[in-house]
Amino acid sequence: MTLSKPHGETHVAGRAAWLRAAVLGANDGLLSTSSLILGVAAAGVSRGSILITGVAGLVAGAMSMAAGEYVSVSSQADAERADLAREKHEITRNPGAEHHELSAIYVERGVEPELAAKVAEQLMAKDALAAHARDELGLSEATAARPVQAAIASATSFAVGAALPLAVVSVVPRTALQIAVAVASLLFLAVLGATGARAGGAQALRPTLRVVFWGALAMATTAAIGALFGTHVAG
Image (cartoon, rainbow, N blue to C red):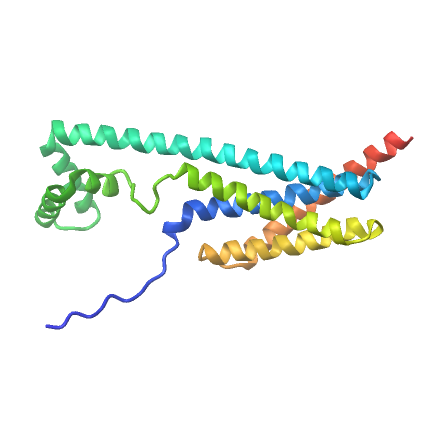
């Protein structure tokens, strides 16, 4: 009998962790920096001051994203290691009960009890901890927490997102700066929202409209506060 070759499939679960961090970082970098630029620009400061403010926001935001993501994902990794340590102890202390527990999981998923017991026995004979980690705890190599990877992805994507409105500031005249940054940032947000949705295997329209709406609201609110603050200071 000739076995057919396995068909190729593309799944997104393996890149879920870094994709989430990258999309969050880029959105945050773009939106926070463009809003900061619009708020400062609305206060009537010079282009140089706007650029300095934007660069400072880029650096501070990237470092904050990296630190926050590292701490958050490290906590997740600590919890995973603790669960694995407890499970390893239980397997060593009472392997019969753990075999029964694994068999029950397969039965609940629709496997016949006798076959479930055999599957659990064979899997535990090969790698008991891996079997329990995967089927009892829901842990796998593809979804494991990776703090350093998440931190780097967040900081890098934040910096890339923040650099986009700064690039607009550096090339457009001061008189057109606010409109140019707002329009360009909304376009960038739309592209980013669609790209993130496609990379995650979802439809693009709804995530794109969502990110554009909230981006426009954030920028408009910041610009209004900047204009009010600038008028107050000038007065």
